[in-house]
Image (cartoon, rainbow, N blue to C red; front, top):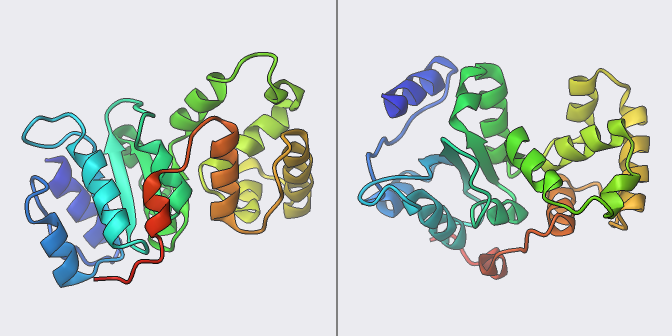
Length: 216
């Protein structure tokens, strides 16, 4: 039902759905045949309903580094899957996020264009995982908000719209919080996400070494 609902949602928004599969069998063949901009996967898929989607996402990103991949999950499961966010062109969203159609479609579009999209609850879990005495304690409430949106893959322009601030104000907040966290500033959204995730203790995956493999 969810798969059919998503397919209808994408079609209604003017996108072409080139394939719809109930499991990972034939997934790579479908990607090879249709060359989609983005693939949306459930974290838990047949036959074991554990981490088939996560493993499939890693395999897809290894073989097609430029392919956008979005993982959907019923619960927050930060292990393994969030690490893929450092590659760019990756999203990890809770299924409830689909209910906000415009926000969901925006996140998927961002991933299809090579950006990142982490669920707000996932980034909050990562932030809360840090010790109280960590450098995160130096951040103001507004800087925490900006950091969370940065970790979701949003640009300064997107953050400004979300927080109803000027882009210049957001740039100032971002610059200050990156300095406090001793993270090198960057105009590249993916590099910012990667840097933030590294600070939060999420290590880049081994598949990052395969970003420049030729597309099959």
